[in-house]
Image (cartoon, rainbow, N blue to C red; front, side, top):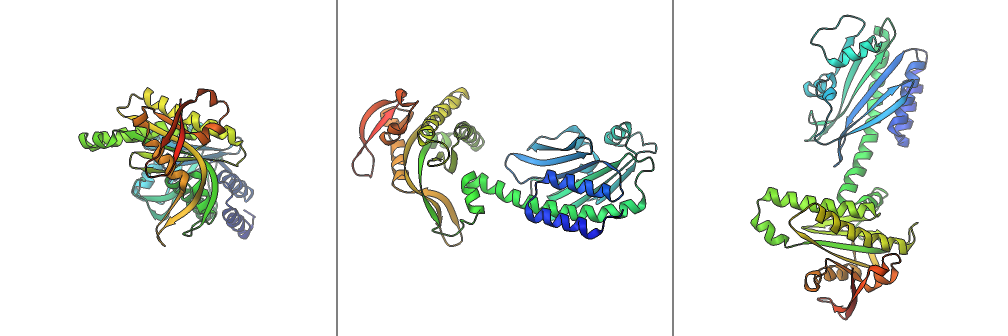
Length: 390
């Protein structure tokens, strides 16, 4: 163990400040620990996730194969995890656990230890580090990092090696916390305001009035008959129907490169930004395809409510509105008002999808699918707008 302490700690600090990917941090850390005189043959770190899609993530490192990352969805966990020692440490608040695998194991010991012993491991130690960040849905009630470290050295870990390892794992946990905080902030923002808007906020678009003029295809969708349905059905049925319907819409929009900006009761407002790498005509076609696919998915799911969708294109102001301390990142402008009024005509015209003349002019591959419906008056707005159905 010859590496100066300052080198490893400085490396971890720099990796944390740079936002080095977790995989690279783990591989670099294990390499430096082994260079200092230990003989790590397997290492694992696991952290909870503040993410609407996944509950936790783990990373296993072995010198022969490098590091492998795995994510675990909410409501799912492997038997090995549920019946393993690390989850017991989390539940009990235990800070350390060790098994000398070179010695006989108790018949009722964890299955993990028998597996590791069979693979030639001789010693195993685990640590738990809490981030002092309470999160209700997480096992143990808060964010943290659990880690395990194993060797095949016939002598196992010496006391001196463990005295060397433990504080350095604590420093690793601090670096991991900084990465988890940033990742969680991005995940939460993306979940609530959309991926592009979340990135803009993280880059500093956080003041009221900060907005950008952009051109975009707007998609406004609404569940027809939802008000009556929600009044007649139990709340659990209403929420299930709403969420499953939003799944159909959201998956179709995401598949075509669009982003949901907000949910408004039973309505959805999404945008497809123009002037990016993808040609505008292709974006227009993708938006129309998303609307068609959303309808298809809703039909395949055999949900009780139908969906009305309006598509339009125009300039919008994309940014923050609200109070000095409570903001909403959204789009405002005439095009937003127009697409909302267009959607309200779906029932009157008996059309599940309505497309504005401006968007119809932009479309290429989908143009042949469009059917003119004449110029229609939009409630509360001057003039008429040419609309198309499919």
